[in-house]
Length: 528
Image 1 (cartoon, helix red, strand yellow):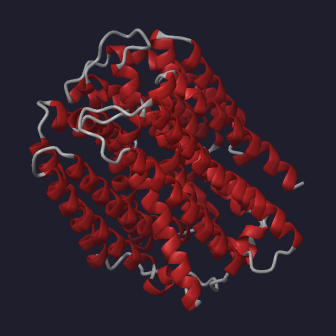
Image 2: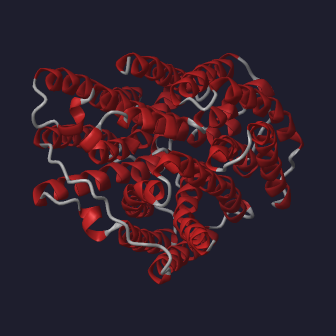
């Protein structure tokens, strides 16, 4: 009994960091429309918030991998999971302090650049935390239930995604005040330090380390350095198109197209690069490490796409709703908060449902939990929004979408491959409905993207590292790097929106879900 209490206490301390990740990530969806108005940005520029934040994940994981390869020792393993999280929290606190400095003054292009830099530092801290926390959760208890504990942690993460947009929306738009933002990041920074102190003082939380020997992969490192260089060149050229542009001056159509082509090129660098690696590693696997496995390469691109589509749907919602293209009436930036909260809340609904398998129950009880938990989670989202003063009547019909998700869960039968396939197909259908319709139907279809994405991360992750053996840890690191999709795909949609309109730009999400469905089918064939 005592050991069980220690286990629960350690697990609760550990999963607290998952809340921070969700809180900040989802808050960006509200922060983006605020910055667009506050700094007079176009849609592409506003998406640079995601570019900075999620790009940091890639660079953080890349730096860790290159350093560890040179030293032939896993840096995270040298520190231990516990202290790696502590160092990551301290780094994120530094980023929060930088954000306080960036927003404490008159709005200028330079202050927006400082905001991007601050978010990059926060993201770097998160990359260290994520690299350590995910295997930590898996190893803190019965290994066989590790993936279910990740779902539970994901549920905590998603609770942060529900709360974040609401709090930030209330602070920013009631009334619009940069001083509120200063106070928020002061509090966030203190919370990062408080969480770090909890980890330091917690004697029940062991400083676990992996027993897996670090594997070098020189060819994989060279590949990552090459694509990083090419991506840097692409975005340097993109930023150069904005150079010398006055505050209210718009880009020429030529510049708009150049930026669009360069953002698409950045996407192709990743996708074509992984195809080339697959061809080269199949001929000679020496030096490629985990990248010699086709399921991992497919999974790397799947994680890239998954994070990209999850982020881009939410990040562009603000522009979609305030532009009135869905014929919902004219909405102000402050009016979109409950809808953004519901989108990210959809991820909470799915992850809470997915975490049911963590608990040892009878089949009958589990069946009822699969029905009740999604509705309870939906009710909590509505309740939190109502406490915040938002009208929830317009959100209630979303219960139909939740019901469809429940049916999908029963059809999937806790099988990762089948789950990913079903939710991938649903994602395609929802995005198509959002594209061709209007009004509440289009809105709820697009919001359902959160429900479709909710359960995909553990499915993709488990399928991608299946069969990697001694390269499992390395493969996990490569997958974390592919969170880069959250930095690349939203700006692509942002620039597409500047040219063809915000609703039409959601065509990119259709192709994303098509690939995720393809991955679920393809990976099944690999394991036959």
